[in-house]
Image 1 (spheres, rainbow, N blue to C red):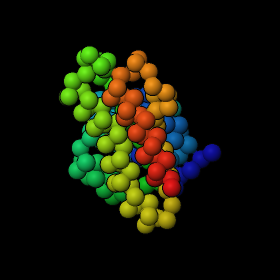
Image 2: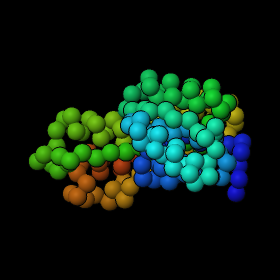
Image 3: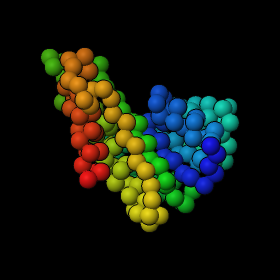
Image 4: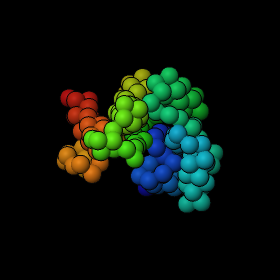
Length: 175
């Protein structure tokens, strides 16, 4: 399916699920804004999307730390300024820290995981709502994890808490 009029914003678009979304949507004719903390990952994702059939003129690189609410607002404005709208937000940005188990958790590690996995997700949702409301349409996809439904010591308390919160936030948003 080709769609040349739709615009997607993919957070965490430099790796993993986010990058796969960038490649797939770009190959199908969407305009895609790619955000990730590392500029080199954003650039690599765009190069990969172009190699798989995406149009480079319809791709926008925006290095972004989603835990910075002001930077998120600026990114949303930049996307709308370039493409005129945002039809799809895929919140795929997410991290975990090495010191993730209870005996090793630090305040800094906790704050980083919650800041990106939960706060950043909410900041991005809030940032796209004005454009989506003005368009009278839009879709938000929040990527969680199996850790959003199941508690396990494997992923650690910050990650489990953040991903459970993503599920709850998404459910509350849909009410």
